[in-house]
Length: 311
Image: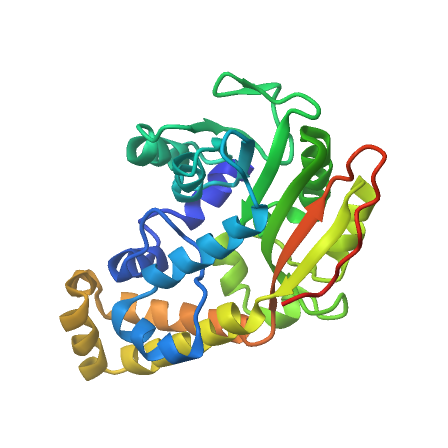
């Protein structure tokens, strides 16, 4: 199975977890979401979509992209963030290794002015995509929201190198990813059953402290590192606990089906499977980290000040 096919299986509507997420509202976005403490009860009742949109807005805001700038949205999935960039006046190119995701992006957002989509590997970019040359120094910004964990360690290093090559001097890369807390705590410790890795088709998480070192080796300056672990992973873990507690009983399942009627398509085996898988995700979310990195390509002849670990 190719990397594209392997990753695509994680986002297939045939997956029980993805079927449940779709019924809860996941659609054009597939990120975890950004949850504030006062709105956590609302998230339990309303579903994740408003919080997924909040996370996308926060990630895109770090780009500081301006109208007219050329932006690569790497691992764009179904195209929501690419379309947001296009609507804001940027010339946005969304690339994803999964043809099915790009097909959906084109169906959903193909008419969005300023947004184009192409099937491409962000860690090994072609010379052209959607008729846009991907030449050295041709882009102003690169964005990657919650996709790099799929790339593997070698792929992440390659992606950083490709991003540096693609960006003009003074350009910016925003990379938001699930990371491991330390090099001594590999994914096997966080996910001993392999359920989370098997669900999302990835091998391991990058230690959060290693990303800036890898970016520096590629030529970048680290401008900001933001720890979003609590509003993303820890609060998602609370929601996972609430869901599994409810979904573990017949009465709870009926209550969930009243709120989200699409869940009625699940049989007893499906409920057992999704409870097991969500519990595994909760275990990872309680220990892993979630980090937003802002890496700048130094302007020619200009030293960019180092700013690190900001919230």
